Length: 303
Image (cartoon, rainbow, N blue to C red; front, top):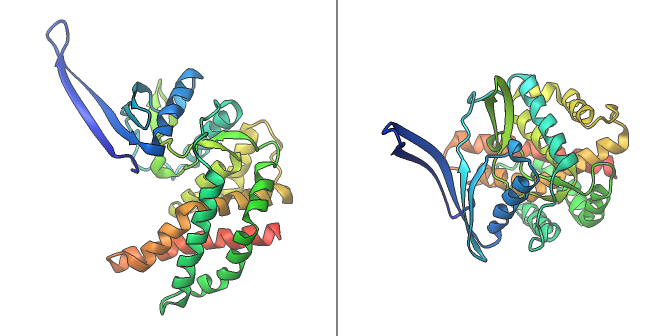
């Protein structure tokens, strides 16, 4: 929702035989750095990967820093299909397809590593405020040292993650969670479609995998219980060994910590402190604690 405008549009018309017809699509107006998403859709289309994203009917570069996307309005087969482990597994299989054969994503004007470093420092500042507040949780207080260590060595740890084979130097969606995945029916089969490609880039495939498993595990207890099994499903989809050696686990949790520092942890901390209802503040605190556990685990495994 960072785009300047996102609208679902329904157009009604009469065909050549005079019959009433209608078509729905999503219009997305992009400005500034967000124009990158238009180039991502072009890359997906040109590389025959429209099956993993909404079809782009129109990609109109209005100016150098402004673009208009008219995208397929993908119907959901189910509002919340993720209680079924097979549905969660299908997302991992689709991610493997993207990671193994995805197009080169244009990122020339996005220094993601510098942006991540700034986000991490802003997260640390907010956590320090949260720690000193009257309601600061004990987990927040215990997490400050691991968080400091992780952020202090973030460039080196990110470099190691981005060089860890065979999951390095690949196209990733960059923001995989249940809000950005639609399960639809096509030819009698369910298939996942990824939306909101504004954070797509070249990175570690484990960033996408950890984003999906950890965010889904927050909402869906069955996915949390099956975490390692689902991770092995992803490895098998890549025709890789499905064992989870210590170096792979360390890289996986570092990828998760990167996702936390990219904005997820800061967002939930802000909600825990500033949401307008007790329920929303409690939900924010609960989610923040989940991401802090990822931080602690990543620090312990990469120490």
